[in-house]
Image (cartoon, rainbow, N blue to C red; front, side, top):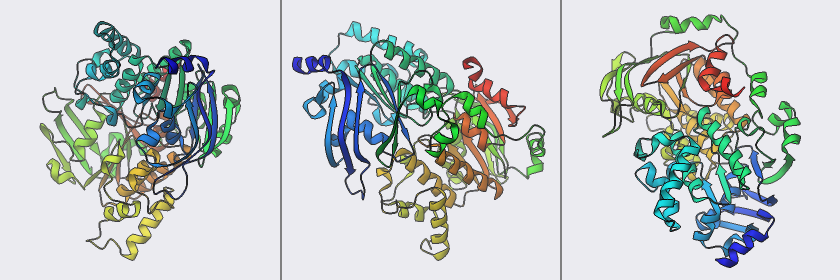
Length: 523
């Protein structure tokens, strides 16, 4: 242990990858190809690139999930604090490297928030008094003091993400590895995360971030490493990266690098568009596909999250559902789709009141964590099972539909891959493809762009537009301002268990959306 600690202090580099190539077991091509990277102590390095480019695989090398948790062929060497990863015990490595995964739910080992934040400290044998202090400090730093003592099962995706980061922070590691840490975060939580990363840098910590949403890192990141097809295709200082044109970054599949850049390219309808009248006159778009009346929804043993919520979803409209982490957006989506039973209230689908079990299939939900709704052994089997053709899944018509959807969502070449072997972005696109192949009257997408690069965000945007044009009612739950602006016709704000406000999205109302997101405080 003392030898490892001495090595950690002696090495000028926190992380070194030397000629690393890795191919997952059963995969036809490597996820990383001859990657060499040196990250000095105290740097914040952002690894970005198109979905499936190898970002998550790279993070798994650093925290030793490869090869301990993920089988495959690894060539090259990975060093943490000057020592090969294989030379550290898992206990030693966990004290040096704090990790936050794409799917925070998979990291939870306790039933309440306080115990979860304390878990890593307990494993290291930290004195109880100091542990209590560290838990309080971590919660305050991440702005989640109000979650202490709460059960983890009722947390939103964004709240879970913040709790896992707090748990890593409480251990006081030298290196932080964050894989898509903002995927489920609202702007308030992203601001707290940005402040936390800046604080870590000031403390001499090293931060490695795999990320698609880049604007929050402007002024914090030291370097941007771009991966393409598993190889390093760019390694630029922050100044060099920001100086690139939006067109140059988008050609690489990258998102906007600043809020100003988002505003310069965002495309919403002009004020006074005729379609705006649908907000005040639903009949202009036809009768509602889904109508929610006086809904009361919550989890067992906890107060109601939705309380008296009313909402209508009409065909040919895309409604963005926004609100802070924990406001009830995912609860709203799960209830509408029949995955969560209401305590009171009525939900009608095509004017027919339906209980939760009957709504499933009529209202399709693409989950925030897509791995939980993928059940087949291959991508093609998953898509075939989503088709509703009276059991004739192998019919020519369905084959054509599947081929078209795969092409539209860049899923070609993945036919024989197991869904759970895909990257987060690939799983997201597969879940959306399955939803498109269903016969659902309404589609709900919960954080559909988490883990998605610019090109695939645009692909999802295009598919949503096709659904809207086909008369399908679409609801998008998202914290992704850039995506909401391009995809949605109107916005509904969830607050205090109800729809607090609903307004058409156009150039005149864009400031209102930005205010609700908290951007006015940033700019």
